Image (tube, rainbow, N blue to C red; front, side, top):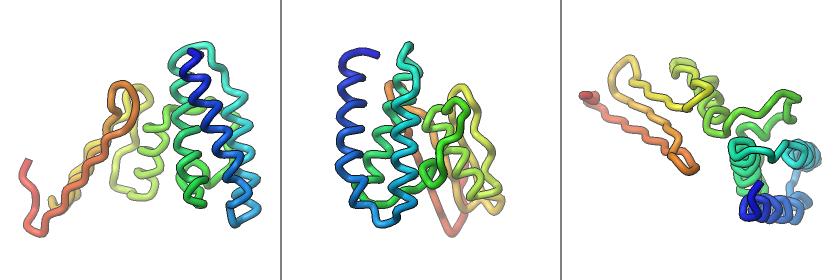
Length: 144
């Protein structure tokens, strides 16, 4: 892991550790600790694993600061390899909204138009980090 990535990860963990006691639920505090342990145990041998590790840490940092865990952090981390955060969030969206397609493992991307043509959702990974989400809704229907 590059020194910049390592410092970013270290800062995120430090921030998370300061905000964990402020979480209202003891279950959330335990889950947050489990996630930080999981993220700390991940390999930092290559750029992809560093990116995955930092993406999850930054997302957890935001949630802990807002005293609300959701998305992948609603459950303890699995023993399996963590997929990219964009893929995880896309799959959570597709579970919550049954007519959305499941996202792929390589380049997470999602495009879906509602059956009645009144709504459109798109999520795409941004090169260099991040996810772009777009949603359009129209009472008259959308033309593509």
